[in-house]
Image (cartoon, rainbow, N blue to C red; front, side, top):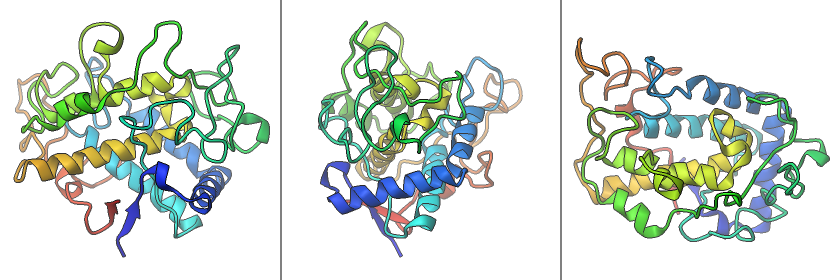
Length: 288
């Protein structure tokens, strides 16, 4: 049966409670840290000379769609009524708005060490200890807006600029691609401050703390953010009927991206699923 992903700001108190309870149970079972480890493993930069599946590559969107589905399946094994809500960061833009309430994700980190002190994922409650990451800290951290060098969340007009691009992705198929919906949405750009980080990327930097880098899955907001990013892919497809994932064929020998990106009909690691198979989610879930 097709289920629905809702805007986090529309969740009832009961829906918030059930989502949090399912997340905490997946964490208790040890499954959640597997998701963190997987994202760290596949966070490969385009300067590393390896296959890139999760970031800085055309498969950014289908890879995270499958990643979200795996987490959602884990949640639904705990509570079949739960799905991942999405956070519309073009509208809910303040530290006091959804999803930063005490009964959902909690708020900003404290100034001294960026530790999140409120909400069910605060370290003090003993149910959300960081076990996988690039540092030894055990508590969840955030630093909204990067006060020492302030940035703002992306605006609706900035997101719309990505949605207007009629081509899914373009060569060189990495963080330097200046055209194409994928990188306009993923948000790799030259410059400094807000100009250097667009859409998806700037949201990670606005939240700060654990949302920076490959261990970003440690912050539960990762999933709400990527559900909204996934929704944009759906909206882009409706806006540009017939537009498909690119490249359709893998780069040939001698090309700079040969063996480094996933073409439409190639399997994305660590799964056997292809980008082609992930383009249509209508038989699994829909967005409210």
